[in-house]
Length: 63
Image 1 (cartoon, rainbow, N blue to C red):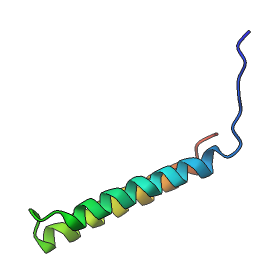
Image 2 (image 1 turned 180 degrees about the vertical axis):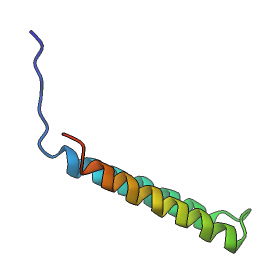
Image 3 (image 1 turned 90 degrees about the horizontal axis):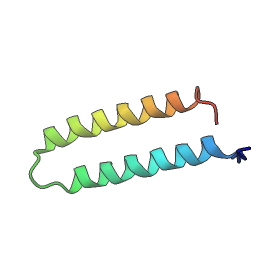
Image 4 (image 1 turned 120 degrees about the horizontal axis):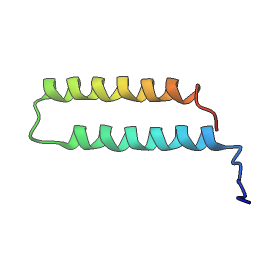
């Protein structure tokens, strides 16, 4: 018989992981010298939209 370990803080850990990933991406975009300021703003907006979508989707997941 297989033993399942339930982790009650799964959603919080997932949200923390998503936020860390977003912050790393945001910092790398800000420090990227190959992008113009306009391109940086566009990419930052895309990253923020993706972060918000993942955060919203995480509320619907069962942990």
